Image (cartoon, rainbow, N blue to C red; front, top):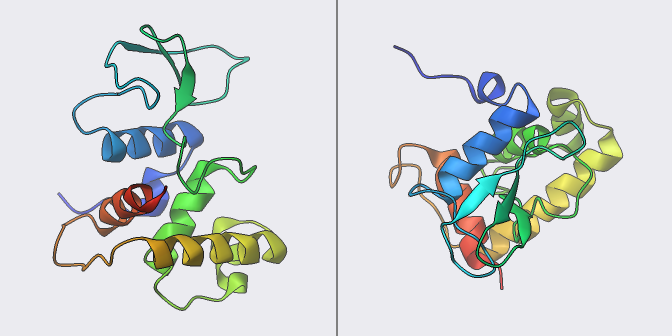
Length: 147
């Protein structure tokens, strides 16, 4: 079986959130506030995709908490496409190219690119041979570099 294209893997918000959850929490979801594994996924039409609630401390959170994807109105699936295209902010890609592929405005693409480059400067370098899934390696290195 061939590799799945990242564009197909992030076709909708739910699949993008599931991917990020698997990358950040390979051993199951963990509350970022208290470290408990007693969490439940919140489901409902009025809730944002990918929300969880900790049963220990009663805090709500998502996989984007304390990542470069937090506090942005750009959908996660578009962010993941931009991470893939720029190899985590390390490849030189024009904002126009990101705008065209991710289907965002050039201004939004430029802001995304700036944020990716800032995160890449903080994160430890990831070589493509160190992990088979370079996108996963980049995302993990981004989150480890955050204060």
